[in-house]
Image 1 (cartoon, helix red, strand yellow):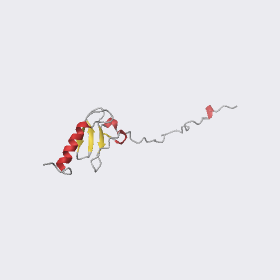
Image 2 (cartoon, one colour):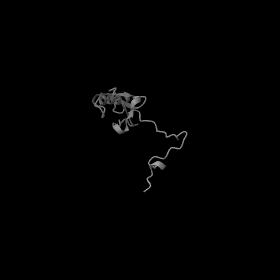
Image 3 (cartoon, one colour):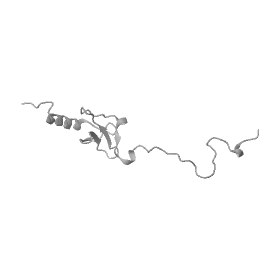
Image 4 (spheres, helix red, strand yellow):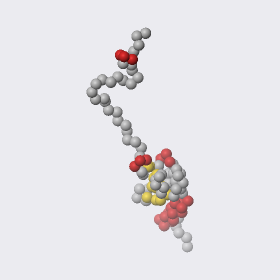
Length: 103
């Protein structure tokens, strides 16, 4: 008697089989499933990227689309430029009165 290929048990067996052969494309380490988050997580602590799994159960193993899980891997926050306080500094690249030659 064979298992229905669309049954949850068959799906779980396929997923376990895939996890045994899939590796992180960035570092080639083993992946583990985070089922609630629908992600596969790299087990290498130096890499630790998270790859999303689509609603159809297809893992998206593209490094460019992976989510960093380590704090130091997170993309830098938007840089904010604050206005100078006090005094009037010349704009970058513009000469001040003492920089202008009288030729």
